[in-house]
Length: 268
Image 1 (tube, rainbow, N blue to C red):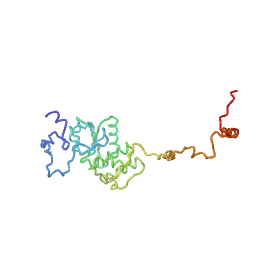
Image 2 (image 1 turned 180 degrees about the vertical axis):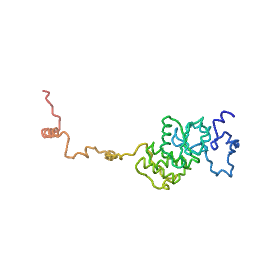
Image 3 (image 1 turned 90 degrees about the vertical axis):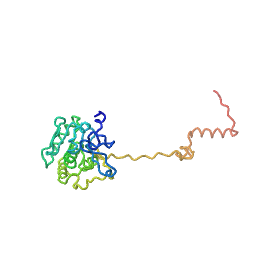
Image 4 (image 1 turned 45 degrees about the vertical axis):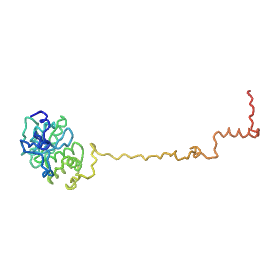
């Protein structure tokens, strides 16, 4: 197989075949959909990117494609289901949660924080990538970013729309939120239903402080509407004249010289 083909795996099944040329995959039988199949949903073999350059979310099917994980630069895998096997222990660093019912958030977050410090890319997966692994990612966002449960949930849901957290797992997230912040910010899982047309939330990496007061703008005089008159003519009374003492002197001189002729001045 040519090198160019190996560098561009199929975006749907993750194997190397000429998808655009309607070649059938020799491994899984994947092919380009026919005209009658184009309405069917194509599930990507690539995991969902949650935090760029660091955190990925996916299913056991994603975790089973080692070559595809390598193309994404993933080196660590967090397995949230004890029943799922860690298939490539020689190629990836694994961490597996040991409880199949209760999600050990602190254990998982400790592993993710170490990956972040090591600047390693990590995949978090469960069987379908819809319930347990998204809950771990939501808990990590609450702990590391300081977000509350609704914001963290929507962040994950927008990047992986197939997320479908069960009520039991959501209750564990509520308890973890209460542990972090002393209270739960949401009591109904239905309120967190993803709405693509909804207003985006304002995410921040730090807690919101008291709002900074906005200064009231001071109106600026509009000089363009003065109609050509001097600003001093508007601001100063008509009776006022600059250089009043000099004007008074001129009046006396006019009385002494009614003809208005120039008076010769003595140079002495």
